[in-house]
Length: 485
Image 1 (cartoon, rainbow, N blue to C red):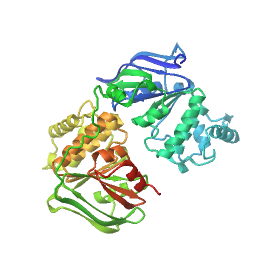
Image 2: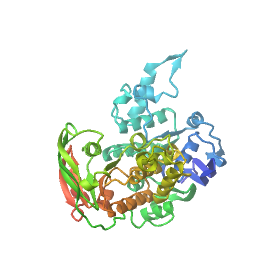
Image 3: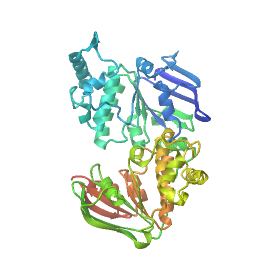
């Protein structure tokens, strides 16, 4: 392997009194994909922001082809050939693909954009990537996967030599992931240095050549991926072996807690019937568009059913039903509020029985859940938007668990969360059902569904297509029931 194209050594960065990076390092090589691995809060996002010029390191050195460089700002990063493809798909829906590709520097003469040249150059880049859309397509008409391709194409227009892929597959189907990886391999073959950030180990071992592991802001391991296995990477990440990611606690399944009878909502799901008992986790599996989230929203009361009924046991009605939604940022939490305020919101009847909320009680409740779910935050007063994605998800889960509902609906509860955090969420879920409550767990993660569910329901195109006991459920059976075959 030739000398690294980009090297970071001894990088330190603090925000206020909180240390985000402590002696962090990284090497990126031409023609190689390096996986950056670490728990939420390990410092990955901060490192990406330093590489892209958003933040400046307090200490340390960055070398580009062996020469020291200071990345002044995002514009300077692009000039150096460093680009980031974000999970959020940062494209302008009201512009064409060509306009998106040249949004940083449109070809122009005397203030007039050379539109034909722009479209032609964009078409060349899209053709090189074997894109299945053309330069004149409105970006708003593209799928999420296609928008990722637009971001990559934009990077190529900017003559990128270092491409950072930050959780690019979080919202993609398996087929879309395969297409993205085809493009990644093509860029690797062309000599690009790629940094791939993901919590999904199957993807890491499929696409990456090298690895770098961060823990608590520091580099704790790096090397050739073929020299390590899954368990060794997990031990590096969390500082201890994670023997069981799915700590399912044996419970005594009790009386019926929730009954759903022939529930339907036009255009979303139809004729759904099932029950949930005390001490039970019912998993709902299905592919994108199966109607799982829409069912959860009706059970929680966001939308109304057109037909059918659902009934909560009389002695559980006061505690009610809570929903942890799939989209934590737009539906789950108020990002500008503090951790304490977010956790307090569904619990004001307890915290403010006379209309006045005690800040001390609010902070005490937040500290309890910060400790219980191992939320990495400076304290109850830290704003949620300054937490990593996984820790934001923990705050959303905490606020509803603190409410003590009889039924908790978890919609993709560990999406974008690292292995250590997954274990913490699964442990507290098991404790919750052991106390006599019930959980409906909606997940696209087969190991999670199989590891945590007492029964599994499978949905396809808005209808139930199968029900399996814990003992009978297998990956093959669930996939077969969920597919169109």
